[in-house]
Image (cartoon, rainbow, N blue to C red; front, side):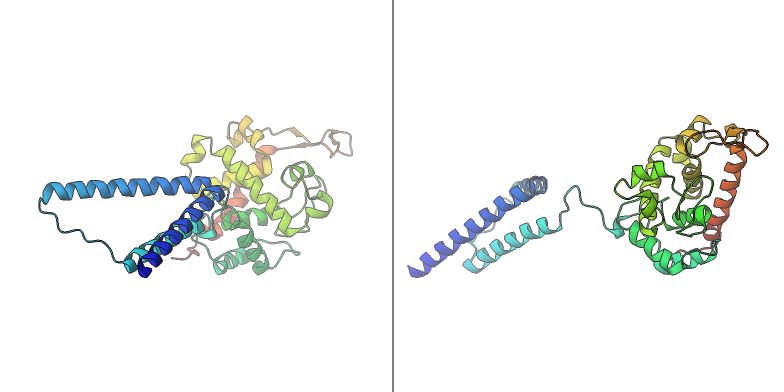
Length: 311
């Protein structure tokens, strides 16, 4: 009698514990809980169908014996562990995927990127390849990225924009840092960091470039020509969009030959810039675009022309 009471007490305690865990799971992660319940119901339905099929085929069912107390409590323990494991491993919808889930990084390691950055053209004040590659890999693994926005793209673009010099400043436009941000664009992507003090910070500049490039990818990917392009061609268009701006390329119908050859240059305050002889200063955007395209391609070819990635 005493043993029976102990079994009943232990059973009641286990049931209460299971109910408590179920209540906690439902409150802490409703979405995950609902998915779990759906899975359990589906499993039970499958089990029921299998039993019905077994009865239909095998008229003489084997004797069904009651499980022992040890096996009963073992099954309860397994159930508790299963529920706990599910809610430990099921990510919530707003969690960022890990590095191994990012297509843009799965074929790259630090040594590969350092060797590639070593080959890129650089300015006299460029960051050391290892230091830049470390920062690049660290920042890229924080966010899921399209395959084209990989370390090769950012290395090639940084070399083209600044020679990988975090302190670079364009004396005409005022653009700063690795990826040569202008104040207006900087304020959009780094609203809590001052352009004056933050644009030449390597980490902040790279963070802004990653977010800016991801937005550019989203806009370009609305076009069929971009969707059909291979990874290297997508990176060429992404690099050109970084420099020229998406709207300008869209107005030119993504045909470089449609870009203006006489584009009026303006000062930072928006006023027209003049040469010393009084004539209006203009830019040839076609020429600049082709030059940017060619130099970006040269940088990318340092990787794609040689199999540096892990096999």
